[in-house]
Image (cartoon, rainbow, N blue to C red; front, side, top):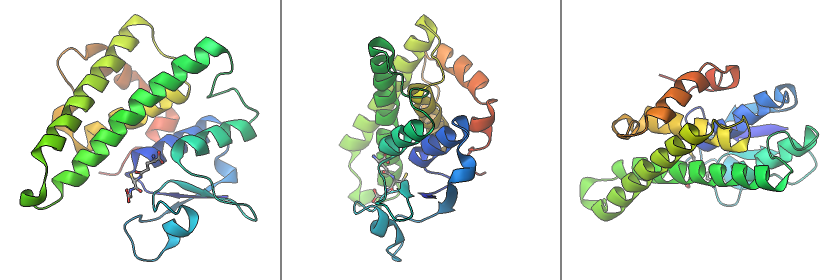
Length: 200
Ligand SMILES: N[C@@H](CCC(=O)N[C@@H](CS)C(=O)NCC(=O)O)C(=O)O
């Protein structure tokens, strides 16, 4: 199988961390692909034109990042990153949704900031920045109350926090997020997180 990926995409990083955590790295080759490129490679796998996409020989491709992660968990035996008991499952899924939302807001903000100044929406940029701040504070509150297990929520949180720190460092450490900082310091030494660090 081939993962269409990019070294800076937080969504692809989420999948790459899952691959390592599940011991599936030797079954999937990771290939850089540019969703903004004109070569049609990404759109051939994912009609939405986004990475990551998982290309499977003789079968249809799988997207988006969350579905790929659930597929990988299933082929690794199931229940390792997506817990099966009701309360653990929905706790992990809500933490995942929170982190995915932070990634969405951060990615949108980064893309908007790259447009010409006159074309940018100050309204949306401020809404996305607020969502990132509130999202990080909520993660911090949850870490303080109860340290999170390494599951899909934890992995998405690592990808989201890493992306905000990488692209939007001025938003990465909102006042009151000390527990999240402490969590991130420890999370960053985990081999799957080290191996997927964005370049630079
Ligand atoms: N919901 C998707 C989001 C993927 C996504 O937005 N990826 C970005 C790269 S970080 C992309 O390919 N953007 C191209 C575009 O939006 O056209 C997922 O979780 O996989």
